[in-house]
Length: 169
Image 1: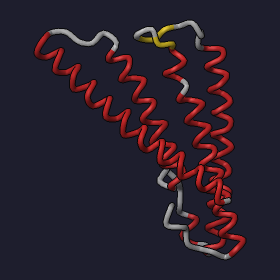
Image 2: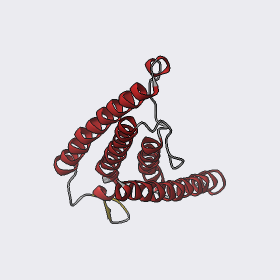
Image 3: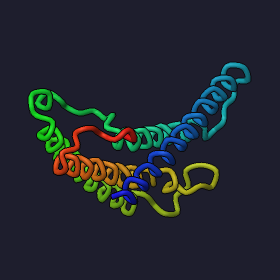
Image 4: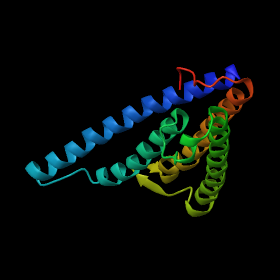
């Protein structure tokens, strides 16, 4: 369990840093595009395409971070009226369900890339298109892993009677 939690924290740390990096690139790029358009009547030809794809990256990286920290969208009406142990069981079930959905979407995104993206297609600057859309399976795979870890953590806490989440969550 400790090794899985270590991997989970490592994924969260890397995803967080990538999120900061990609968001910084987006801010600089969009600011540059606005300045070029308003003051020089020009722009970077591939800038808007890059920004659209970086929005996807920010979304998936943010979802990866949120899924492991329990900061994703969830319905908690029922959990307010049950015991802590039942809350853990419900948390485990919902996290397992979310992991299953992410696994299915992971598979669908792999099929999408294999069937829908020509491996020879170039998006910008001689960079293949699949480099930009690889975030789909990577994001869903990482979210599935993090949801599974959260579910496992809920199960362990429910079985052993530990009701408080660790400070790392």
